[in-house]
Length: 147
Image 1 (cartoon, rainbow, N blue to C red):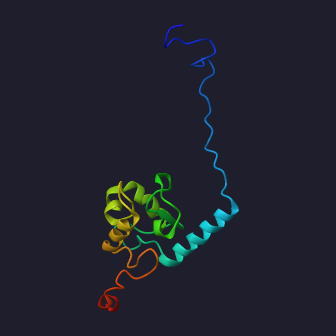
Image 2: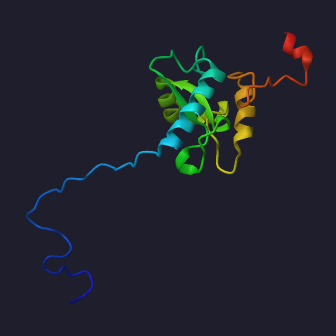
């Protein structure tokens, strides 16, 4: 048989028509991991209070609150308060469609960058006025805290 030649029963299945693809099968998280993630999620909601893109040029908020990963899970980002920010469902989708603005505002971690530098951009864009641990970003400058 020559390279590229089809054998009977191998290669293309003629006459069967299109085959149906199945969806991804996702294994549920172990209960202890699910409980830990829920605790982190609630801590992030408590820290942020509301969608961080509320009252910005990104449009009005709608949809339930979600946690947004600054460094995506599939790219190695972890599920921690450092890596999570509260956004509404609309703005979470908006970030994916407006990547250059999201990068400028610190809503995404770029290639070769670390998460704290994204937090610096979030502070510079005035989306937050605290660090990921809840401490004021002006703690070393008391005169700015009073303003």
